[in-house]
Every structure is written in structure tokens, then in C-alpha cells.
Length: 165
Image 1 (cartoon, helix red, strand yellow):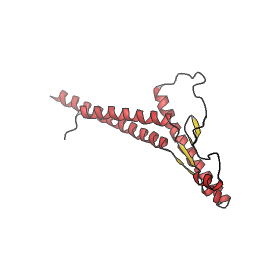
Image 2 (cartoon, rainbow, N blue to C red; image 1 turned 135 degrees about the vertical axis):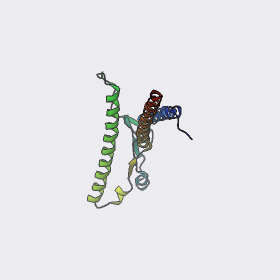
Image 3 (cartoon, one colour; image 1 turned 135 degrees about the horizontal axis):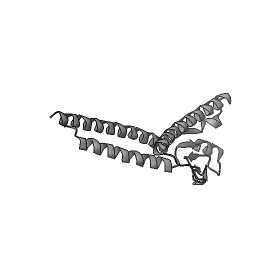
Image 4 (tube, rainbow, N blue to C red; image 1 turned 45 degrees about the vertical axis):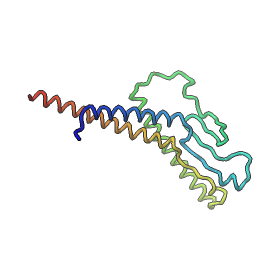
């Protein structure tokens, strides 16, 4: 099967749309960081749930009580170009990932220093599916860029071929 410019262009468009959808869903959901304390809840017979999940905008308990973290739209922002927004999005994803990895490492160190008590072993901290969607969005955005580069190369080769005739 011969790859044509139309196929590459369609692939780039579909990947771009898919990347946008993944990122929009990831940003709008609250499952970036999940703390599962169900084992602790069973041991302690707590009336309140100790488990929670966090997003970029709020933290929610599993009993559907949510508290906002920040309101990014409360003050007027200076105009930011599209390329600056993309760089800031990438830096935000990297920063959140580093923060979560650091938090998990700090938690493991605290458990080690406390002697690995049974109480702390019942707590599980992990990334949620929103984080996975954000990274999937990044990967599809890279593929979109590669498809556009391939399309540009195909157009340049076609023009060169047409000029030589």
C-alpha cells in the first residue's frame, strides 16, 4: 500500500483531535492522584472515608465531597501565545509527575523511618487514569507533529519532482 499525502494528512488531523480529547478529559477529571485507604478503613471501622482522589482543580473524597485547590480564572491573566501555553502545559505535566513521584518516595521513607507499621501499610498511593490520559495526549501530540513533518516532506518531494519535469 502506497502512503499518499491525503492519508498522512488525515492521520495528522485524527491524531490531533484525539490528542485534544485526551487532554481535555484529563484536565477536567479528578483522578490524577489516588489515595486508597480501604484496608485502613476496614481495620479502624471509620465512619468517614480516608480514601481520596485529586485532580488539577480539586480534591475529592470517595464520598463525593470535593474541595477546590485553586481557582485559576479568578484574576485577569496577560495574553499568552499558543506556543507558550503548550510549553506551560508540558512543564505542568512534568512538574506534577515529579511532585507525585517525590511524594510517593517521601511516603515510603516515612514508612521506613516508622518501622513499617501495619497502620501505614494499608495505604496505597498511585497515579490515576487522568494522568495516564494526559501522557497519552502528549504521545499523540508528538505523533501528530511527526505526521505533519512527513506531510511537509512529501509535498517538498512532489514539488521537486514536478519542477524537474
